Amino acid sequence: MLRNLVRAALFCGALAAGMAGAAMSSGAPQAAQTSPQATVAPAAAAVRPAAEPVVVPPQLPAADHAAAASDPAMPVVTINQSDASKAARYAVDPIVNNGPKGSLVIIGGALRTDNSAVWERIVRLAGGESARIAVFASASASPEATAKYNIELLNQYGADAFFVPVAVKLAGRDYRAAADDPELAAAVRKAGGAYFAGGDQARITQALRRPDGSNTLVLDALWDLYRNGGVIAGSSAGAAIMSSTMFDEPRSVLATLKRGVAEGQEISPGLGFIGDDVFVDQHLLVRGRFARMLPAMLKKGYKLGLGIDENTAMVVSPNRDVEVIGYKGALLIDLHEASSVPGPFNLSNARVSYLDSGDKFNITTGKFFPAEEKAEGKLDPSKPYYREPLFAADILGNTTVVDLLGKLIDSDQPDAIGLTLGSPRSMQPDLGFEFKFSRINDSIGYMSAASEAYSIYNVRMDIRPIQIRLPLYQYKSDVPVVGVPQQARGSD
Picture 1 (cartoon, rainbow, N blue to C red):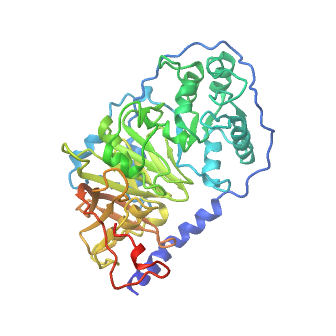
Picture 2 (cartoon, rainbow, N blue to C red; picture 1 turned 180 degrees about the vertical axis):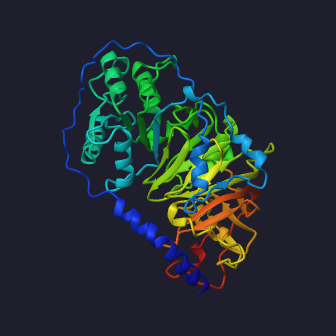
Picture 3 (cartoon, one colour; picture 1 turned 90 degrees about the vertical axis):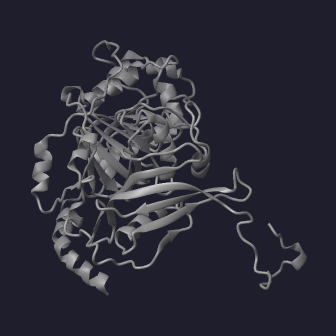
């Protein structure tokens, strides 16, 4: 009852904003304008080889967030705001001129055809109506079919997309020669954007880097496109390549926690468009992949990780604002103050935040901006909704971590516990892990009055290995199993 009254009050404040947003939303996709092309226009000029770019994130203009902070509809939440000096840990050298002027659209995979928020954003960032977008199906096992599908989709949303035939699995073409074709590189450089379809991310890096690890002409052209203001978008495998390290041939999430990662096996170099300071992963909440990010981040020294869920995108702007759009949300993992000790995987004093659709986070300043519909929905810790111990038996389950965090931030409990363990027949069956999430002084939650969705910032996360006693369970001897003879029932 109490929660309903609170939500009714919040709904009044959010209704006007929600109606305004609905009025501004786009209509149905436009009709397809052009048929997919397997060739590109010849280059207008010779292509010069470009050096490997040095990505230095630009400094965020102070005026951008000052204006937002003065707007009551756009509250600003700073990481560890109880200690302002810690904001310096996000600072970077202010070499603004070396930072890319373009944007990234990092999609968690399984992007639906009707997700207009994401498709329309890609086209708009590429230049709007009739924007030329280079489609890379390099990750696909069937590049031509994948390219045709995505070209038709982009064109329905107003683009003029074309196929870049640089793919390991493309029959009848030498992908290495194509990747160093000056005319093809020139066509990519002149485009307003590029889109990487899903598949196997290792095929992308294989196609766009030479055997010695240097950039091909087409990869240099992509960097020029991005540096000069274009958009680079990618879904699933196309999202994995966005960081300088990516998963290559990983084990399951639990096995990754148990065994760790090794360079050239579970992880390998990505293309690094987002910079060297942020690790990216995809299919995140549906597959419980947030946990596999942690060994990779510790191995490579990352302090920030961004994981995006399916049918959802993170839009990274030139000032390093990260905006979540689409169906679900993203997890931010902060290891600036985290520590680990030798032995089975463990982690102390990490921070985890959940950015729901519409939320923003700035990589440079460490500030959060909840979605407009949540502006009046800051949760009051003195009025919790959940009042019982919080526990999840499978923290790696579909969206389980976000569900548990949402309950924690709106409860009277100081912490919540989640476990993960494997089959008695799996590798190291006696090893499991406890995930402990704790509310701290900086933990803040917002709730949408319209959708009842949470945004959750700055929750502490500690992970400890646990001993699983085998057999994990035993049957109650006095409960018969219908259809199974007593002597046939196993004791394992």
